Image 1 (cartoon, rainbow, N blue to C red):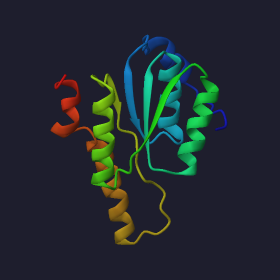
Image 2: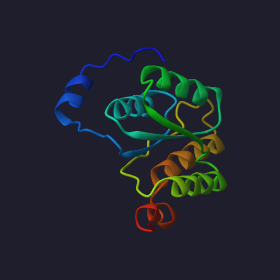
Image 3: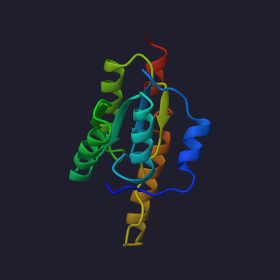
Image 4: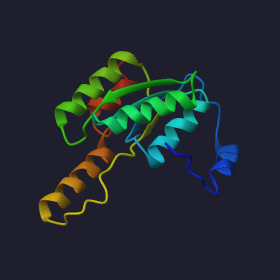
Length: 148
């Protein structure tokens, strides 16, 4: 991924970040933009980052680039299509089997910039965006922090 120039990011990181060593950070939608930068920066701070993306070449490429940028970083890429309840359930089950606590959840995924404005396309976009916002809002996912 090419370097993304930002005006305020260095100051925000300097003024508002903390040591994330050992913290588990789960991020949806990390193939580009905000999700990618978030994964990059929290990993630099020592976090273990779980990347949740649909299976795609973009997801594979983003993982390789993140690993290249932070060679000693801890990344785990999990296939998760937020438009599929089964895929979400599988991702939740995997996370619960691996981690006792999720310290930070970033619901970043969404579908944007679809060319076709027809109702079904709009509905698909709205559905994916809402599932991204609600990814861990139900009891099955939140119980990661309570069951163990």
